[in-house]
Image 1 (cartoon, rainbow, N blue to C red):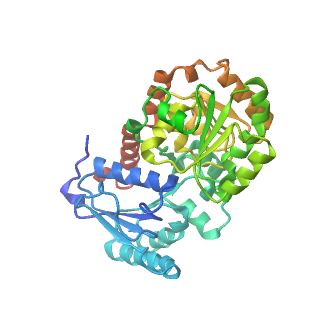
Image 2 (image 1 turned 180 degrees about the vertical axis):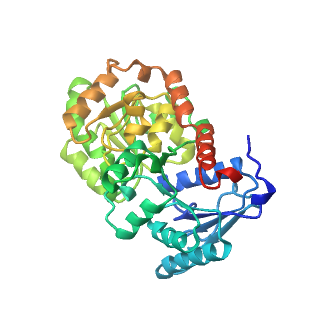
Image 3 (image 1 turned 30 degrees about the vertical axis):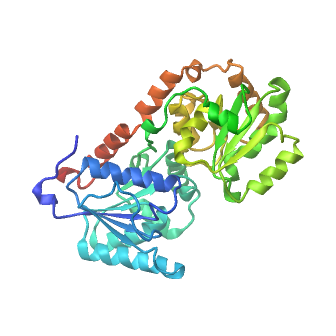
Length: 390
């Protein structure tokens, strides 16, 4: 149900400061798109002004509400984007005096802090993962301590902020990642993909990740290192890695070094339309990461009813509900990764839920579906400084 704003608030607005939404599709961008869709749905008459640093123009038809205004800095030369964006959000805030500023990234928080000191306009900061871990910048620290709310996508990031920045637990609220469950269904293994990759009835391990040299923390190296042991007990095992990026040549070299050419396939880029089929092709989804803010891919795999493995040192803890929805392993322990994957594939892992596809799907939707996301956001708004006006 939408929340209708009283007339007293209909001529005010919220400002949303986002790094980007459209040209690049990463976890933060998807999360911020979901945030914007949820705000539109729950507060349809609330004007929202979106300051977008990197995009040149809007490229998603869903954001057509007359209550949305977009201001882009991405069409400028790269060296001018940051100053233009900073000047735009500062001047916009000083002139319009929004009811609330939503900082879509911690990098923007120092400006929000200064605006707050000058005008009293409250602000929230959204934090994800590595962006908010081990923060040393003085102004970011001051901004964190002065924010009305810090919205974290995971309990893991919240606990790190509490410990590292000495923040009171009540200062941080959770708004976990959501996903479009309608795009991910339980289906039989797709024969067209098995044929494409030259597979038949082999048990399949799947990882979906950007193969970037800066994102080796995803854990695909560890799975490759674990494969020789897995092959000793499950000789027909096959490992699929979906994704593209600058790290692919090094991965290919590692596959050769480990003599895994016959049991590993690098699929390259896969379109959104084929992603669900790739999840349904696997017998276990595995990404033993150690620096993931949350990991939407875990939710997608779970919605397809697939047993799922993640690391026990990052946001995967939240995505897998502390092990309730899947297996959590030490991402640096290749032997533990190997033995856990063997157990899952042999059907003897001591968590019966992972072998119940429909129950797994229902649980992940109930916990992380978009309806739950919208309701949590509405509850957060009600407890904010503008809550009494909503």
